Length: 225
Image (cartoon, rainbow, N blue to C red; front, top):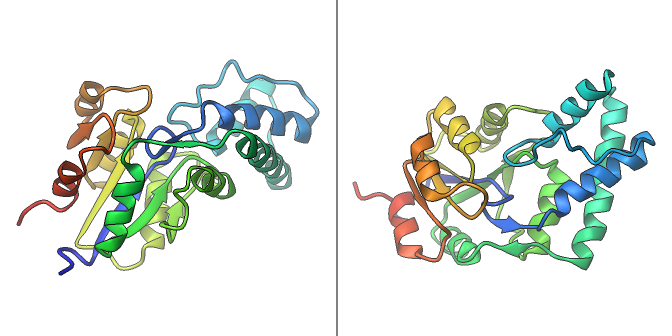
């Protein structure tokens, strides 16, 4: 029996489901150089918990310019091409237990979605490289929105009718902040820069180092009545 057929579980990607060992940042720098003709290693930008749209906004502010929609698309297209090439050489590594959790949630009929600062194409390139693509029918992405709470709202809107329970899984205090802003609980996975105490202090309902304790994660996602 499906214990909660209308549950929605939303996942961040980088540091939550997988690690690309810096490929995303490197691809962004190379794609930005290709599209704008300016060498820039982005030392003034933090990528942890950031969104691709906000990164580009920070670049524009640093350079004292504004990117048009066409220019932004050109940058993101170049970034995706660079990322595809990088991941072909060095695929992303799934966080321990991530594949088993996604498979079990899919088996139970949960709706699975993404809430990520990656552009949509980049998100699925990363997931595919780590063998985690194919589970996610909806999502909110960093193509057009810079703010994580707005990306989360976009994912919830894409999900259609409100589920009986929605949960966000992320690895940074910014993920927690977005979930709290929208009013859904956040489960922290400390596979990135922030540890379990930091995620709990930020307001995560629960947190663990990874997904290897599958029964515990299922208890958190499917709490007893």
